[in-house]
Length: 227
Image (cartoon, rainbow, N blue to C red; front, side, top):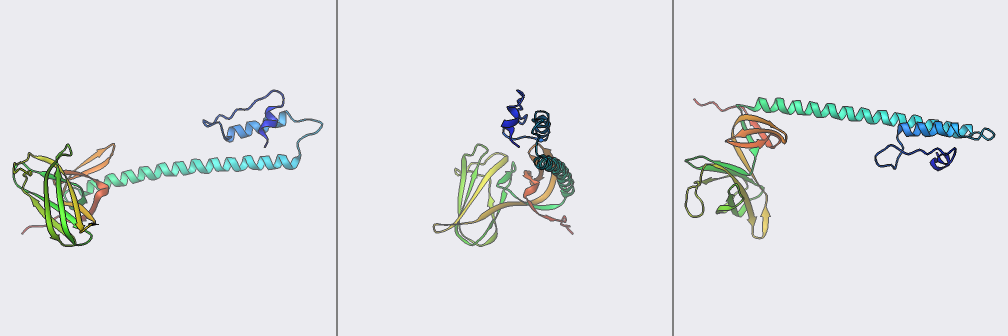
């Protein structure tokens, strides 16, 4: 449909109400069609074939609008269902043994902290770098000859100068290599799932005093029984 030809008849001007002013919506299309009929030349009326084609365009547009609204409604329902499922699953994890990916470790007032990591291949050297909450490096240890798979290194809670660090959560970086080639490394934590927190940034579950996103939980096990 020629918008300019209609706008030039009878001094009528049609402005799309869409925010980008570049495309016609359903209401604008219908208004344009009606205006074209009102301003047509009675001696030379619109060709019936052209009019039928324009009605077909309007019908297609109406159907597309309906489909789009249906898709948006379906997406909203799916998002709500997903959120409810996530919340229910998070609550069910409490009291179970879980493994979750994390780059943090908790240091108690006394005692050591176990740093667990998984290597994609054996490594000649593995650097374990520990940083405080400000990102300042406080400790670096190099392990010689680490095997592929699961590894554990015990941090005694002291910094590079031998001073005991305070209780809290620390950032850990694992850098493994074979010569100049890097080896893939993932740090994780094993422990009992504790409290569940629902925040604006997602659902978090506490494992060994560390808050981890529920999406980072990769393994759930029944609590181990001690005889």
